[in-house]
Length: 343
Image 1: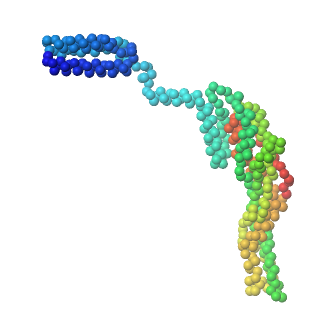
Image 2: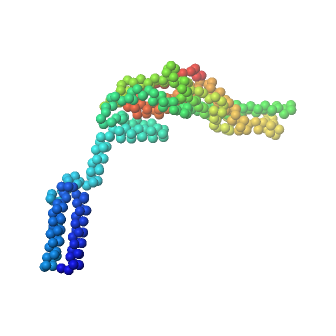
Image 3: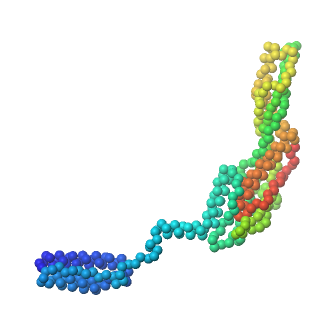
């Protein structure tokens, strides 16, 4: 063998040795081959390379003593199947928290759009804890009151009523009498308002305007029960004629009476402007306002509508959703009215 062939064989064997060392760095000590055996093999092969026969020796690489690496049983399971099983286990353990969060978000969304719905009751709790010791028992009263104090708009109760009114104009022309009278039918719309949040002083405990009573605490199998009693200022009737609107203006007169000179040229020209739309609307609006504050046939349904609207808003939009979110059902709700009597 020539010196060039001998040097090439040595370089080839050295590269094989480096590759074997790089591979052994990623193996455990038990899986690494015997370095001494490798060196002996390479050295023996090098010595054989000097044999006068000139034949290239066969290099035998020693296998790891423990054989090839064995695959663990879970390596046979696809990765997506393992992650799916883990997600199912997590959902099964924390399903009560996930359900509670979903119902709370749904209740808030329905309340935002003004929809009143009865949702299932689920209490918040960790898998390793019991709901019987929930702290919402002591917080139910203050949290419900906090929701009520956040109301920023009054409740409105409206009613519609019809009435007749007569408009008369008397404008003599010299010694000739000139007058005209007409009776019209009009429809009035009025609203009474209820202040749902009269202010912090109204809700002081000493005032006695709010009380929440816990009848039973929530358990793992059943929600708790509470009762709520409240007092609000009595509905307020319209405060000015501008709070009342009128329909059917102008409308055809139901009845008319006039002097024998009407509608002559001189008398008619004087009286006609006094029956304009603005004049008739102003008179009808004043009469409708008076009826909305003095006529019991108008004030009573007006107040009843305002009280009903206020009760529905307080109970369905503020009290009931809050106690349900805290693990309670609203057993009873009563709303009384403080203030003087309405005509």
